[in-house]
Length: 138
Image (cartoon, rainbow, N blue to C red):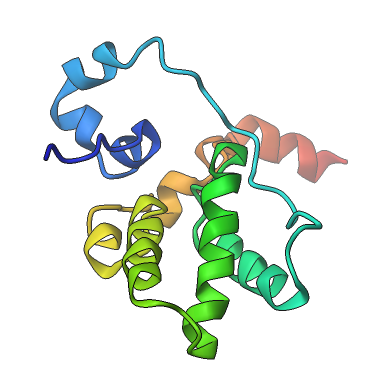
C-alpha cells in the first residue's frame, strides 16, 4: 500500500519545497485552506471538547478542513483514556493521530519555523539616523 500524500502545509513547514521546488509546482492548484479549525462543535461532550481545545492549541497547522478527523480523534481519545476503546478502535485512533501529524513519528517529520521566521516582518525595518534625529528634535 502506498504511503499517504503529505499535506502541502507540512511540506512547507519542514522545508521540502525549498529542497525540491518542483514539488511546489506540482501542487500549485491545490486548494488553499487557511481558516483555523475553530471552536469545538456542539456534537462533542464536555470531555471531548476539552480534548479538542488541547489538540487544536497543540497542533497549529490544523484548519477547518481537519474538523471531521479532529472530531473522531476527540471521541476516540476519551474512549482510550476511559479504557472503553475496542481493539480495532486503538488502530483507528493511531491512524487518526497520524493523519493529524500527532504521533512521535509524524511529529518528527514536521518542523516549525524558528522564532525569527515567525516574525511579522516589522523587525526588518530599522530606525535610520535621520529618523532618530527627527525624534530627538520633537
